[in-house]
Image 1: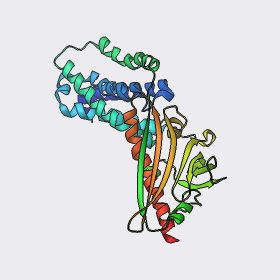
Image 2 (image 1 turned 45 degrees about the vertical axis):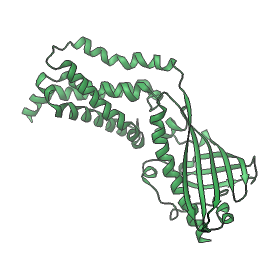
Image 3 (image 1 turned 90 degrees about the horizontal axis):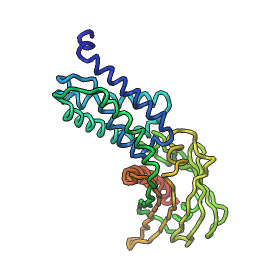
Image 4 (image 1 turned 120 degrees about the horizontal axis):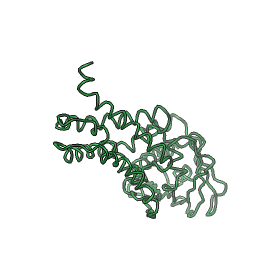
Length: 316
């Protein structure tokens, strides 16, 4: 233990300082510390990989194991600390993990290339820590573009269109035995419970209820019985759970549900194809990264919901 402390003592101190720096940025940026921020998603992870290596000697910098292992330990411990003190939830850390681990490692490699066999100037190196605090205000001045994305899911059902239609517009309480929770449900995405409609016509209001009290207020914009129904979607802000993920995503200003459409079409073999399409809008400077996670999570939700509709329709 003594030998380990003597060999890696300064690196361990660097890791601790790196974790402290990560927490400082998270507390400082607060609600801005999301996947919508270039500063938080790209710059901070890169610097987080560099900080502990500022305390490495030349021999330690030559080791590629250190260049990979040290940033990973720093990021992983930083994530664990945020999770334990309630700053982030597991699903938030999952979304942040890719950029933090990859860019942390890249930052470490860049630092190695620049600093190996060179005399370190601690004063100049420490100015790196100021970059996020200087860049973030500049980033705020640049308007974020808004892009709308669409995700489709389909299922083939052996039931008449009228039967399927009855399970779409208004959804009776979904029992636990009907809905198979997926990975995302287990880490925080609420599952659907039911949907009620006041008037089955254009302009009617549909309320979608989810676990934890979350409510979608949906206005019917297209209504052709047994063929197609569309809804404009708004999240009831009063129903958003106080947890970190819901507040970041549903009460933030960069992710917005737009609409959803169910389309029923008969197939030549007598079966019916049911298609569910959902659109959402992202407003950030890194919309493509948000799209990746938006598509994955929404596709999982849609596929599981269609399975419920399929099962109910074929049982009748």
